[in-house]
Length: 253
Image: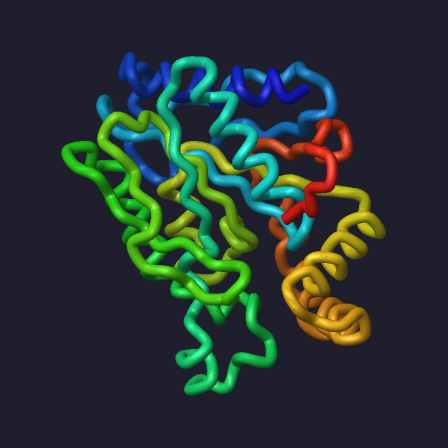
């Protein structure tokens, strides 16, 4: 199954390089045929718009469903296939704790309004069109739970950028505009009890007690997950992460 995903992404990059098709508008890009990948019967998707633009592949899904795992594996698979790729997670656009404190939102960090969606949108637009020089993007330090400016460099030779985040398919502004910048958006899902247990484990890994972690998942993460799951039908492809062989010991994200 993973080889099918890499092949689909490679085909997107090759189509962009060839300039096949002229899907210039965001509405065109958002209107592709949708599918589910439990079997390997999906086509490679339609190519992006204008000749020379970089492909941006989005991976959405609930917390701990495996977004970052798939994104990292996919970038590795693309590189091995001879397609220069870069990973730019949405997490770099978390608002810093000082901003969340000022807004009174720190107690529900990770909710859709605790991200700088407009800043993320501006970066995607530049990534798609600017291939003359390195584009610098923010990362996110899990140990600090803080965004780190200018920590990810996307070099001009990168033909495809893989980006992952919770809200890529959300229907409140500016997220529909974000979706319009993406060549394709895949939605990853995982059996719900497994996903939630991994999410609790991740919170514990980064400093919460088991009781604090379980409470945070119930009060903060579960409402976010319901919002994210409601956008599933808008994806170009649905990927069942239980069908992928993940690296041993990896906590899905």
